[in-house]
Amino acid sequence: MFSKVLVANRGEIALRVIRACHELGVKAVAVYSEADATAPHVREADEAVLIGPAPSSESYLKGDRIIEAAKRTGAEAIHPGYGFLSEREWFARAVRDAGLVFVGPPAEAIAATGSKTAARQLAIAAKVPVVPGTTEALRDAAEASAVAKQFGFPVLLKAAAGGGGKGMRVVREESELAPSLDAARREAKSSFGDDAVYVEKYVVGPRHVEIQVLGDSHGTMLSLGERECSVQRRHQKMIEEAPSVAVSPELRREMGEAAVRFATAAGYVNAGTCEFLLDAEGKFYFLEMNTRVQVEHPVTELVTGIDIVQWQLRVASGARLPFRQSDIAPDGWAIECRITSEDPANGFLPSTGRITHLRVPSGPGVRWDGGVETGSVVGLFYDPMLAKLIVHAETRDAAIARMHRALLELTIDGIESSRDFHLRVMEDGEFQRGEIEIQWLERRLPSLANVAPPAEGVRVAAIAAALIADSERHGRRTAAGPAPGTVPPAGRMPNATDGSVTTPGSGERWLDVARREALR
Ligand code: ADP
Image (cartoon, rainbow, N blue to C red; front, side, top):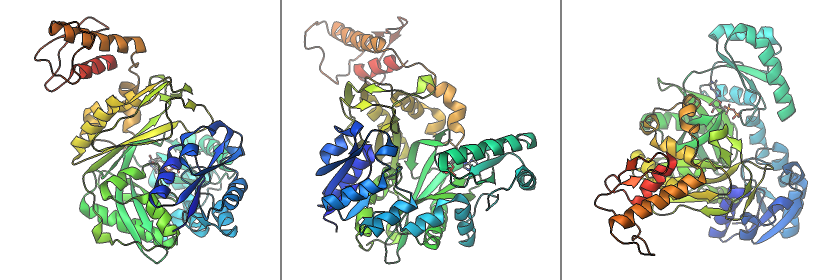
């Protein structure tokens, strides 16, 4: 094992990697921008190196400075996390050329899978089903039109170099093709410096189901099972779970084998993810491979008991995977909510400012992978994800109830967050029944996001009303108030907003009622 590893990232994933290093007895070096001088990942690392000003193009994307920092501090390897430099072939190559280990796949495997069109060709060669469409960039609108007619509208234009949903356009009829192709090309050029765009059939109402793979450099490649990531807004995942309600043990085996075939064909080593669309008939289609650790890796860790980040480090240092495919099966259910600094009541507008108070949920089966704390300043330089709240329980129903309970324990004051939106998803009947697909959230957003969150005053009033009602019913007005967690035999709480009264349900505590009222 390495003795020192540099972590080329920030926020929750930098902390996640630092924790894995420390559990393995490895020293961790952080890098940071001027905006992150007091960030938790800098404090938790054993050493930290300032690499530049706040904009990531001046700091976290400066590969040469990061490699230099690794050499200067005596780190033997660089873990890139996700985003930033994690999927840049040139960076993986530069790290290797500098005599260091890149904790991820070989540069050649990144190259083989980096372009969506090249990945589609590789998938076809490995007998992995792909969405019908082209495997080369389109020459012009006439070619797009000819292809679209083969399998019918709607079609999806996609940037070959795409990522993060950029350069994608749904085209519903012939007349939209030419202008959409121009727009997709422009966006692809400005986002990725490459205007190659190809066309795929637009699959209506599929689920996004992905397979986590893990391979060592001795020829073992394993599937760690699926994650369901269908709850998406603008092609961006918001809630993920493992396993998926739509995947039987038989389908899990089939999809797992397809992912392993693809990864093997790509010469892949380390942790990676093959993304698929899964239609209502149980047919699956390869989308792309993400050649890095995913944001949503914890749900797989919780149901398999395999620490993916630790294994990334072990495999990169040359270790053999000690498990076999037959050892791996999901145990229980895990759900992750991405807690972002976005305001769901305002079209998910990014919210900035200082977090004046952060209360992190805890208790049985709750995991918080966060990158902020009370006092952190959230700006616009980086991704709005503040933390991931992850729960694990015996069944899906129990995991939903646990996530709901954990979200109620979460307080983030000072900025807006996606917390209340997640609470409403956990309360939603369709979500509870697992009736989700990739367009589900967009369809349901008006009812799930546009309920204005309560003003802080209303929330405080509701809690005060609950406490007053409780102490009045007990006939006492003591300074100490009621014992926390007591369940009054009967009682009614005046609602702070409309004067109606609410009674606790069975097993409910007054504080729950206050919270429920505050969320109305
Ligand atoms: P990116 O790399 O930009 O994230 P992906 O190919 O991974 O692009 O697709 C992102 C999301 O877009 C998928 O999770 C899915 O929701 C949707 N999507 C992609 N391809 C199709 C398709 N052919 N039909 C319908 N939806 C699609």
